[in-house]
Length: 445
Image 1 (tube, rainbow, N blue to C red):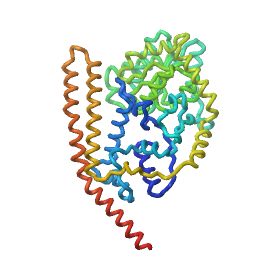
Image 2: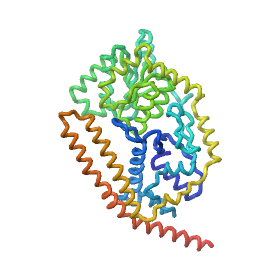
Image 3: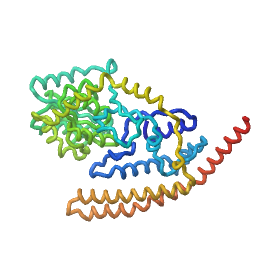
Image 4: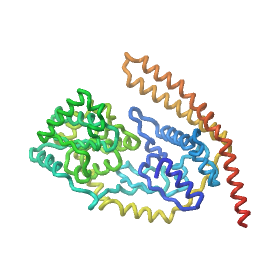
């Protein structure tokens, strides 16, 4: 229940007068002063700015001016509903109307319940896949783990799920850990469906062939295991460190297992949030993009695996806390929340100030907001450039800054020329639908 799906539910609820409850897996989309909508990689953006930028862009694409049939306001007008104004964020509207929202995330793991959420938005607990639905670990997993334990060696797992991190890149990280870490861990690399045959251009390079050959040598000695996947609930409690992509499910399993971890990969959406949260909880070092991982991976793994590691101690503490509150799969507590909130659910009603009066005003105000936020982005980006670029490359930083400044003013013009094009048609369609509904009621009477 997020992104545009939430708007679909709101249209159904309002037009059919059906009570609505949201089930939300990415609650950072709810505007709040406690967190930004998307955690920036390199600089600290104000949460208010980040949320404004996020939902203005979201609103623009939901009212796609190129394809009028895909416009959210067209969908509303087709059902006789008033078009939204430029100020509407669906989750903000739900907050104002106390729409019940069930969020299956542990409150401690999330960082506490924000004070600016509505009273019917509740953090419950993680949901875990358990019982007969989870297969046992394959014998080859148990062999490398038991051999490591027998030799008092730690075990490290790398898993990036479906994120676009290539096979060779994963193997490269595995080899760095095997060859350079002082703690001498054994490594399990979960590569999904990243087979060599599927990436011939990558596999043809001399470097890639060398990496594959070196990885095969480590596999033959039992220090490395390369597999497609494994049930995390069975694997994580048996290992000593997890390098993961930071998805909600993987992070929850890692926290419950009480294992130190680190988040890396392409870091999309809430993966950045969870990378930051495990760092703030003290169970992981700071999250790092996959392109920067090789600079810190050896040091971070050694620190996490060292005797008396603070990461390990904190991970055990968090795991005990989660286990004390979550008995079983987490399904029961979430079902109870839905049942309890069902009595408080009401059909969505659009506030008067949320309705646009004229299509031209929608375009003008949206363009104004986007322009203001774009200027904030220019300031942030120029600060990033000044921080990252060396003094010998100052002209590059200046070029980036100037280009962003030149392009920021294009947003108002783009919005006006595109959205205004469909403003008149949208308004007329809405009037036509209202008239047709009136004729239908007159005919029925």
